[in-house]
Length: 472
Image (tube, rainbow, N blue to C red; front, side):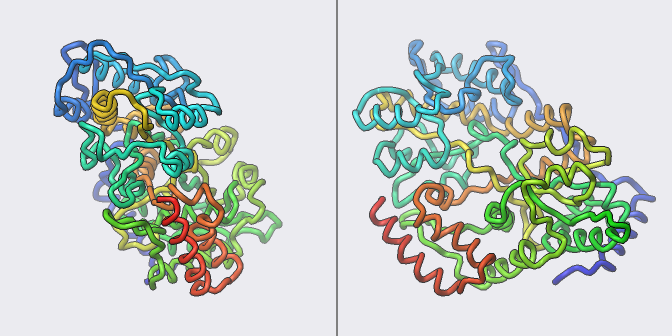
């Protein structure tokens, strides 16, 4: 049921009356897990230490554990520019000391050519590395070339463990094969898309506090559009126009961001079956209608996406949708009060807020030819375990100190980064054009060109099934 402006104002009045009794009890934005010191003096958050302690102790006699990656910051020494680096360094030391190993970067790590090096060595059966951390699209190509191990066959890797993101395991499992995993070890929250907003415009339009709406689970598509329409309608009479929303990314990207926020998946991927398109249902059709209203039917949308950061900095844009990594470009020179909230939910009764990660998200895989599977499995598990529940808290602590204006904003950012979105379509849709047409592009074409959904679904579903059968 859609919320009217009158109801929103009633919510605002209710919140104001409630505030006269006591302040809303929002969790602190920078709350940090308890820190536990190991016998060797390394400090880890207690949740991570508990997971690491639960793993079987082993001694690998000082062996080198080589990690090949296109993002060397994941294993760089301290004092680098990485927001998470100090916590990662402490994690690395704890793993090295527990297992008597030395973590090191494989040759050419951090270079654009690292993927080809991994692929060539793996297909030759060479022992180039014990673990690879790569962008999802590169991992998919390695899987298609049969250059990756099935992680379900690697010793000491229990893929049901809490330190692996369950969505990521599900997204990369086809039949009895799982090719890659993600968790706090591979997660950089700065890649998550959020909604930057102009707080002064919210207040000048007498709209309810956005942080309250998020805290009470009332931040959804309906509310998003109503805020946009109210701000748009109250400006422009003197020639100065404030728009409802825009983004420095095109509508095709925004359709993916909004789809992720609904929590739905483009593909079914049940264990024991091949993935298949599965969004031909009433909920998806309703989502398409609503997304079309947002991206193509709302006059409040500022369509020149390349200029949207400048328009936002001028105070002429209520909402701007972009990753957290771009926060400095959006907020460094603004002369108004601003904040951040998650991408709105599809509907109020949706339980969680889900956030879209940019396309360069990373995952962990083990190439064929790894010389010691026990070493690969044990240390990979330990790296994930000792990273458990650390990325978000560490990221928020430093992000709060560097960028965020107040704790309410920090709480909203915590909400945004705590449910990263993984879909099997990520694993396929960035590689082959026909597969992309059968997933993301299909949705984009429906909402942008009014193409017939039934016909697109039938045509692309057959095409997608054929590709899957040929690839796996």
